[in-house]
Image (tube, rainbow over all chains, first blue to last red; front, side, top):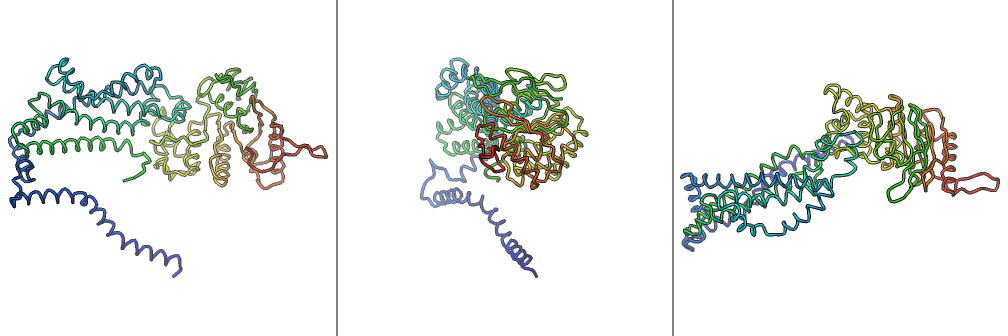
Length: 278
Length: 263
């Protein structure tokens, strides 16, 4: 047997031995992340069961779970979740539409940028919650003011993201489009749009995160439905389990919607040269 | 026939990059433009491509004045400038949007085969080496079958082996399709490998300094005495163009320095 083939055999054997180990490690890694919260939950559950605490202000996991199931069984949870979801969706669509249009225009035209951007940046520095009293005066206490507040929250990250992305499109790539005599529309479709896509997806996700933040603020202010209402209701009636159940619902919805955007955008971003490929 | 008629370019800040360049390039000819930095080589190429418009004079291709990018003129830049969101085959077919799908696929396939990258058709640009990426860029420019192909220092970022390899590739493609080539380079050896005619430019403002015909039979042997002689001639012209020549005792003009790469 020659030296080369020998080394190959040795390496192969080593590879075979290492393979199952690597597989197990890959399965174990996400499990490790669950270790701490599960231990804490178990510890608290046991502490309450053993009478070390009455668990009235910090309900044990089993009570939270039962509350969650009860709320779901009566259909209350679904009603409130749907109300919140509708508001976030409406606000998100409005905010993204406005943010995309303004961002694209200010990114594309230097003149518009000089005229419009300073005002928008000034507005951005206002904490958006500060708008609430004004929005209620202007748009009433019902859905309109809530949706607009959410839209304002979504608008800024999307606006900034789109504007930045359009400004930083590589001049050299645009020149390739010019050399192939692309018309304005074709230039947008074949060069600019794909070029800004990665930054756009990131700004959408940032916007959605802010949308979920602002829906809570909006629902604290005189709503009779929504997960935010469940929070306030739980506080006023002294039902901490209901508060935590609503928080859990927020977490699930927020994570799912974010995952959805990431998922839908994956096929458009497969070309990206990422730092970390997994 | 590609004609430059007293083409000049003065930038808005008053810098005169190009001053009255007049030039005729015959169909199928390979013209290599060489010269010191700031001599307006790239400016001239961009004026021919229609990406920039000259401030004086005009560029004419077969009776059409070029003021914007023209379908019969392709350009290859110093960097490959591939679109990272398109796979190699789609990058190559970028200029064929209006073509029927079947024809486009066939033309992309033949061109990829010509540059030897058939197996890379489904690959993303980021997975290519520098030389492969530049080959894809050449294929992309050639697929619409332009009459004139402009090359702006296309191989200057590559290592010596890859560069020589791509020069041979380019010559093979040229022999196939016979487009007019106008190439800008820094590399004297590259100029002599490729050119039918070498145009030496001098800077401040950019002007034609000297034209040197290069009629060595192809393929050209980089080691031959004739090749070496041509190289010395071009180097000497370059040095004279920069007023750096040394007159030796017997009255012969000698290059102030040797070396294949000339910057």
